[in-house]
Image 1 (cartoon, helix red, strand yellow):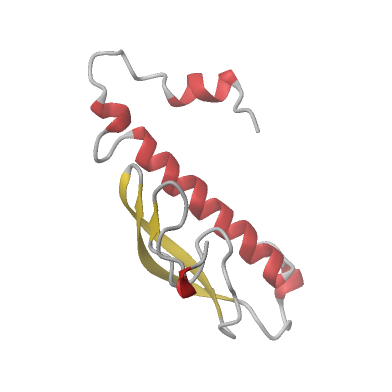
Image 2 (cartoon, one colour):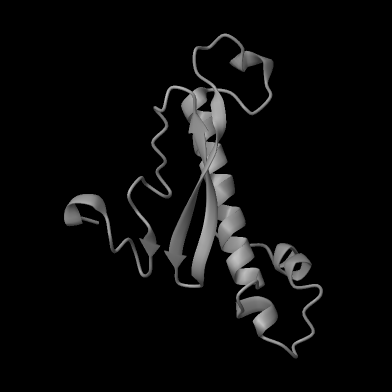
Length: 117
């Protein structure tokens, strides 16, 4: 996948080149982008799992629905990232992008359950 230049320009519109912490620091763009992309991917996984988008009428009476979110800290290459992981009422949702039990992403998962990647 290639990120379009226009998207990068929009993300960097306020960066003037004087303080790299704006991009790489604790609350910088890289960490915010990591959090946003992972959380959006988790929402997409939940939509696939349930078979409908959030607030769609198609979800009424299905027997399973969204049930809030849980917090998880992911140790990423950009530092710790606080994530909100969606939950379903029947506790059947198994996220793929950040699997249950995984907390560290540095050059690939380094703490996968069972010791495998």
